[in-house]
Structures are given as structure tokens and as C-alpha cells.
Length: 245
Ligand SMILES: [Zn+2]
Ligand SMILES: [Zn+2]
Image (cartoon, rainbow, N blue to C red):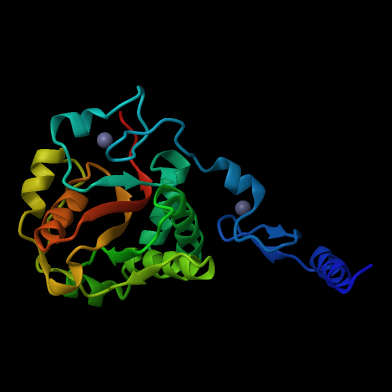
């Protein structure tokens, strides 16, 4: 038995005596190697079988979804590891409400999605910002937490990426968006974002990071600005995308 096998056996023995808890359901797991989320939780998260070629949401037919058909978004393409629906939506919402452990988990899943979608790397990650007031009030921006986790995972896997937290600013609140369609949301977000660093965006492959994509209007507006500063492509990477209804 070589030394590595011995070490591995010891670790297995250790893990089988003392578990650690699942970051989603808190149940104890005894598996080795370490995983953030247990099998049951992992299986319960919904992944799309067929996605829109443009925005990446789950669709009912091949091609482009109805939302993109009526208003094509201005980002190059969208990707999400999960479908924002039912229990999966509740898991993603917990990150919005401050659960950092789940942000680590979702960020790693997002990083894997990004690595298979854009295998060449060399991307600039930019999280979608909150307004300064909102950030002060909450002390937390879920998009920033996800971006940190994505970045750490990409580095660990030698994928070339940079993280820029201050390229975009949100200068005022966009108001309640929940029940609005793409056009109303697009109007709502028009002019609420501002570029504070234009030069660093020139000829870059930008990956916007956010927790969810509903209509895609926020991603589209941010992409409009970033492309205006000379970026060659702007992708939207979210933890979950609302399926075509
Ligand atoms: Zn679990
Ligand atoms: Zn679409």
C-alpha cells in the first residue's frame, strides 16, 4: 500500500466517524472527499434539459425562448447551472438573504458552468452591483459573494480570470420589478447603472455575475454599457434562470 492510499484510508476512516454538515439541509454527511451539499439536496436541485440559445433559460422547444424572441437581450449569451423554480429558487433566495455558505456552493457550480461554456478562459468577472445605500443597509451583495466564490474556484482550476468589483455602479434604485415584463423592466433599469472604469473594459470578454435572471433586462442593460466601452463580448452568468413559462 503506498503512502497516498494510506493517507486516503485514514481520511476515509476519520470522515466516517465524524461527519460534517450539508450547507443546504444541515444534515450530517460522512462522505469523503468533502462536499458542500449532500446527495439528496444535490439531486433535488433542478437543472435544465434544454435551454434558450441566447439567454440560457430552460425552454420547451429548441432555439430561442419567447422572451428573447420579443426583445433580444444585449448580452452575448447567458448561462446558469440551475433553473430558478420551486425549491431550487428557495435555495438561491437564501443566498440573497445572506447565506454565505450557499453562495460558496452556488458559485462553484456557476464556475463549472462557465468553464464548460467558455473553455478558453481569459475573462473579466464583474458582479452586478447594488446601490451604495442598499449595500450599507444589508452589508452584503449576493452577486459579489458569488463572484468571489467563482473566482476562487477558477483560480484553483488554472482557468484564467480576473475579478473587478468596481467597474459598475448602481446609482439609484430601480423600484419593484417582480411583476413586470421585459419592456417595463428595461425601462425601470435604464440609466440606473453607471460605468466607473471604462478603460479596463476595452476588448475584454466580460462575464457579468448575478444571482438570478428573470426577464434578462438587468443583464441586458449592464451589457449595453459595457459593450459601449469597447468590450468584445459580455456574457451573463447567474445561479438560476427563470424557465420559459
Ligand atoms: Zn442536504
Ligand atoms: Zn432566451
